[in-house]
Length: 385
Image (tube, rainbow, N blue to C red; front, side, top):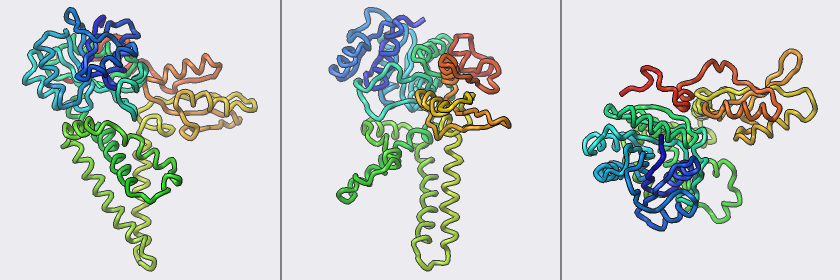
């Protein structure tokens, strides 16, 4: 059981971890190279800015990917904790250094909470930041069961959903789902520097959506891209190939008397159709999206009930356009939507308390993530070490 914890690095993620743990009764010790940042986190109630008097149960390394290995090695040499994990968004490099340099690699398990905010620093931290979001754990071949279970307990303390992966698979996945999207947001936002005066008055939601994450810490993101350069380059090359196709198609469409306009239209439509198909695979973004959990709610046959239900599910982050309404032969309506797997049971329970008839279709038995969060152990073969 985690009773004491050290958090090294008190930015957005580190402070959020400390706040979540502190609220669960864990005694947290904070440290950061910038003492004012650590003191800010402490003033928020995240923990104490002093050296632990004895070895803590768990040390959380909330530092950039390129620094994890060195910080881990130093912390283990000073016997800071029984178990060590990190929250960096790249896992191969830290694992490699842990296996080759750390005094005891068996006491380290890589971690990465898959959530963030547009803002950085301790003032942007939230204890509930991780709730119902995936938290990747990447145990190495040498990670002990005790260390892995301690990391699982941390995930549970933060209210997140554990996802176990190998470090290489993790890095390839986040290159596509996180690192390249952030890079493209920055590239698009950079175009705005040369925009005509007054352009901001015509800025629409599309611009805000595309550039939302562009204002992050440039030094941190340069470190991330450096640490995962090969995987990121692979995705960027594929995006570049699509952009080359799009440029050629737009050139065809720009010719008023060109004979290839139909071909250009087909190319543009094909790219949009591929995009729609890809979006459908993101849990919670579209009805029936793969990888999420479906929730269905019956709508009472009374005026105003459908808008009231749409308002209720909006409280859980489900937009009305992301829900699907079905009618049976008698005309009774049912609203269906998809949410993150870890959030489905909580949402169903909350809706039932509110008087709605909500269910999870085909929810047969506990999932792996449900079992590990409850501490019931790990199904045989679920973790490859």
